[in-house]
Image (cartoon, rainbow, N blue to C red; front, top):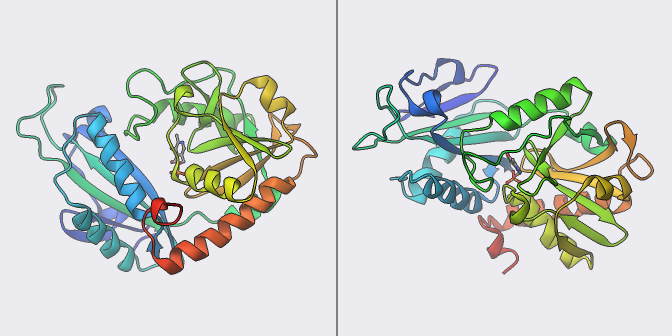
Amino acid sequence: MPDALGVAWIEGHVVPIGEARVPVTDRGFLFADSVFDTIRTYRSRPFLLGDHLDRLRSSALAIDLAVPWSDSDLAGRILQTVEQRGFPGEAAVRVIVTRGDGGFGLAVPEPTVPRLVVLCRPAPLGSPARRAAGINLARPAEGRSKAGSVPSHVKSGAYLANVLALHEGRATGGFEALLTGEDGSWSEATTSNLFAVFGSRVITPGPDAGILPGITRALVMALCRSRGLRVEIRSLWDTDLEAADELFITSSLKEVMAAVTLDHALVGAGVPGPVTRALQAAFDQAVEDIAARDATRLVQVFP
Ligand SMILES: Cc1ncc(COP(=O)(O)O)c(C=O)c1O
């Protein structure tokens, strides 16, 4: 049976998260020497699982961490965890691969025996209300950047800059907080990508600014294009954010969420705007279509 947090797959078993244990010598614990990915289920099936596994692999490759499991091994363990989740409704699944155990030194152990953990918890509640009303987006005064140790496109366990940006953002009443990119612009938020709308133009920062290439971002860009909205990939600065008609953020768990205030100042009319609402509806429809087709990769949907 799950506990309030959900269930975990670890060492071949699905157990309540509160009972899942990792040794203190695990390099994920000691050094954030790990990668992860977060997937949401719809109809109890992990959504766009193939894309998430691709990104997990590319994150692992970027830190020279060999992932010894095939996609079907990983998918099998994820599906088993979701099936045995024991709670009603949809799940948020986090797949974590660490560089395993290796004493206390920094040197990468030879041989490396990576550790796989799958965490499965109820998909966050409250999103529908926030989605309808929109959120306040904070720009932390510190202007935290993920740049430095690991490139932004890598979803490594090193999330301290994101943790601190969100900590500061929450202290000032933000639901989400922005990160500064490699060029000093506002590149993305702590666990979501950023979009600004100007009329029928939709602007989102790209890899040059230093972003995690969100799978929801890619889906939303495709939805924009199929609806005649022009997508521009470029950096967003204070002046852009302050002049935008609409701002919204995207992620697997938040889906498409309007930012109706920026540091408590109204964005546009201060309510979710027409483009954001249209994209929310398009996103819902795409989820239905993709889940019904059981497509696991965006290229199967938008070739
Ligand atoms: C830093 C960061 N940017 C963007 C995203 C959104 O990515 P996705 O849409 O694939 O969930 C995440 C997701 O966790 C993230 O951590």
